[in-house]
Length: 42
Ligand SMILES: [Zn+2]
Image 1 (tube, rainbow, N blue to C red):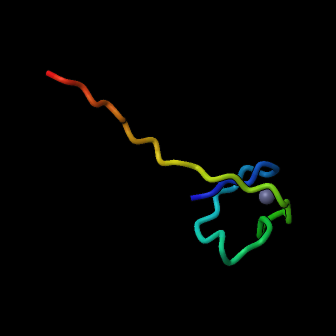
Image 2 (image 1 turned 180 degrees about the horizontal axis):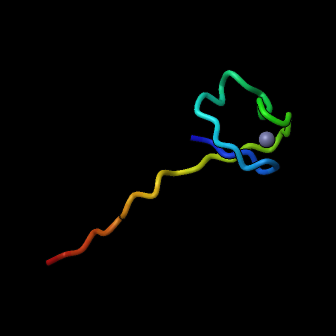
C-alpha cells in the first residue's frame, strides 16, 4: 500500500503507476499497515 503525498489517496499497485494515478503527483510513499508490533518477553 502506498500513499500519495499530494492528494493522500491510497494506491495499491504502485508499480503500475510511476506517478499518482489520481493527481499525477510523483511523490508516493510506502505505507505500512498498522500492525501492532509488540514483542514482549513474558
Ligand atoms: Zn495523488
